[in-house]
Length: 153
Image (cartoon, rainbow, N blue to C red):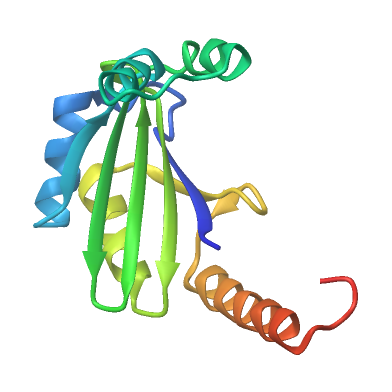
């Protein structure tokens, strides 16, 4: 379960070309890994080369999947997963935050360096340290309820 955030330009413009956006993030998060996720068609071709055949419906769905730019960062006791979309011009970035560590310092440093807004998708407001603390408490309580087999979970 991640805390779901969105990076965006405060003036409602694009963040910039993918290479520029990745450069800014890389300066704040040394060691981040960037890659381009395969399109559905490329995934089908790889699977077929290994002898796997997709059923027609699944194949049709996979053919609609575009390549996507991605990034992963592992911090001390937290991780950040970036999804930049499929365009070379990045409008917004979806960011999933996981773990128990001090993820917010890295996120606030990125905001300071880039000038971008970071929005908590749960409430559509600028993210705060309290959002991260509240999310972790909710996540831990939810997991405990599931483990205890409480009804309705």
